[in-house]
Structures are given as structure tokens and as C-alpha cells.
Length: 178
Length: 113
Image 1 (cartoon, each protein chain N blue to C red):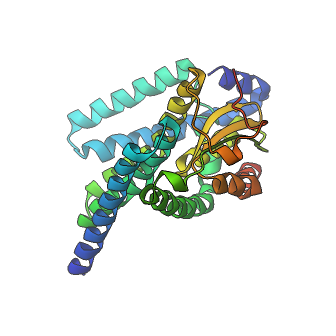
Image 2: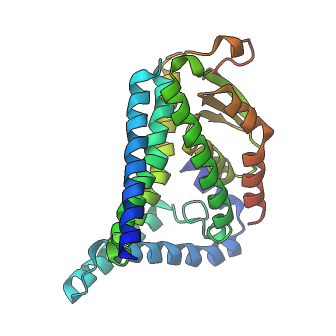
């Protein structure tokens, strides 16, 4: 939350007034979609209740000052799909390896704890990178201080793969294309 | 077509069950907290994903599909955050991970806060 307000301060005023409607609109749309998927009733009473709760949430979020490019990364959503496909492939590959080592037993694993560097500039980029690492079975981001990430991994090879830096490069690319 | 969906759904569910079972076995088998967390990762991602995809194939036309996709999306967003919080809490409270001997040479010590 503190970072959010700092990031907001850096953005020039006219940019804030330009950005806010897009983010509010995207939050409003996603909330409406959420309500519709979950209720799927179209009688006026429930629809108006939905509209009222969406407005309430929008008002609270606005007062909390959390509607910005970090909570509503609309600029990322379109460019995300390529990265998500690649991440899905990575998840499947590492799932197979972890399951293999579960059945092979304790002697086949080599738990490692190392610190690696992240090359992302923004907080959002770092969070995407750290979460991608955690989402891939076999590696967990334990700590993130500045640019240094502490990673615990089940196998030494996982760390070598991370250090080769393909995931890092892809997240940085994703971040730069925004 | 219906039969094909049925078979696909069954296969996905079976694979999902196997992955969840493997995750469970991993929790029992691995030596310490951190390695057990990796076993949970299997259940979290592909295990839950496969079961949800299997359920999606059961009813590919209805609103249930959207709800299941939403569950999958939220699982994938929330699980890494929860795992990270758990691991960080464990390390902060001085739970030292069991490390592989060959890789445990200076420099790789956990960063203390």
C-alpha cells in the first residue's frame, strides 16, 4: 500500500487524471462480470443489489486509493497471453520432474537455498517474476529484498535453470513492452 | 463427440487424482518443511488444474464452465502468495532448511532479516 501511494506521487497530475477512469472502468467491468458469473439471475431486485454492491466496492476502493496501475494492470493483460502459455509449459515440465522425485524418494533430491538477482525495474515486474518462480513446483521464493531474491529449490538443477535466466528475460520483456 | 468429451474428462480427472495423490505422498515423504512445500506445489498447480479441466469438460456449454475457470484463475493467483507467506514466516522464525551437503558451501546462506 505504501508503495502504491509513492508510485502515484511520481506520476504527473494530468497522467493521473487520464489513468484513473481506465482503471476504475476496468475494476467496474471485472466486478460486474464477477457478479454476473456468480449469480446469473436477471430479476431487477438482484441486479440492483449487484449494482449497489459494485458501487459500494468502487467507493471503498477509491477512498483506500488502491485503484491504480498496480491493482488494475490493464496495460499488461493483452501482452500477457504469450507469457502465460510459456509459463504453463514450464509448470507442466516441472510438475513432472517433482512427481518423479516424489516417487524416487528422499535420496534423489538436493534441497538448495540460494540468492539470485532479478533484473526487473518495477515492483509489478518483480512480483510477477517471484510469483512465477513460486508457481512452478520445485522452486519457492522465500524472500525478496530490493533486487535480491532468496529461492529455495528441491533440486540443484532447478536453480541452474533459473540462473540461466530465461524466465527473468521473459518477465523483463513483458515489463518493457508495456 | 459426447463420448470423446466423457473420455477426455475422465482422463483429466484420473491424472489430476494421481497428481494430488503424489502431492500427498510427497508431504509425508520429504524430510522438512521447505521440501514438503514443493510437494504441495504439485497438488496446487497441475493437480487442481487437471481436476478443474476435467470438470469443465463435463459441462462445456454452461455457466459452470465460467465458474470453474474463475476458480482455476484464483487458485493460480492465490497459491504462490500463500506459499511465499508460509516460507517467509518459517525462515523468519529461524526454521533452518535441510540442505543438500554438496551444495551447502558458504555464500549460499539464507539472508537474515
